[in-house]
Amino acid sequence: METTVRLQDKVVRVELSSGAERALAARNTPLLAEMELYFSCLIRKRVRFHDDAEDTGTMVNDRLRVRFRPVMSRACSMEDADGAPPPLTDFPIAKPEAYTPHWLRIDYRNGEWQGEFGFS
Image 1 (cartoon, helix red, strand yellow):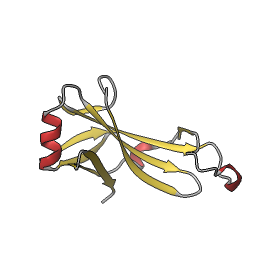
Image 2 (tube, one colour):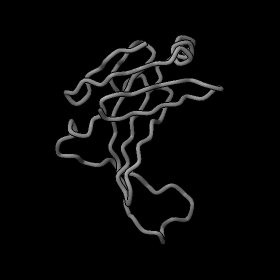
Image 3 (cartoon, helix red, strand yellow):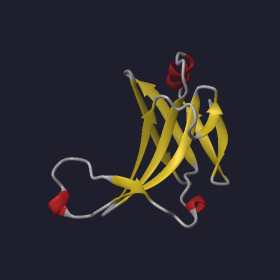
């Protein structure tokens, strides 16, 4: 299935695999797919999936919500790299629409949600 949603005044194409559609249909509560753009020493893209997404994100349908969240680490130091993930904070972007992804793909394989997002 393919559809679009509007985030930050930008159209984002959302593609669901057949496995993702089946897994969403079996849910009782909405799933939140969070597109995280992580600014630190390097830039990383990750899709995080959260249960209990009742009041967050933009509705794609009654079982799926999406949101875009730019974040940054509080520090960028090798001395702080003890194996634990660094503490994150929201990254205040002056023009978030410039960084909002163009597409999001969601799959469900082997009991795990998988996602990727990108820019055209």
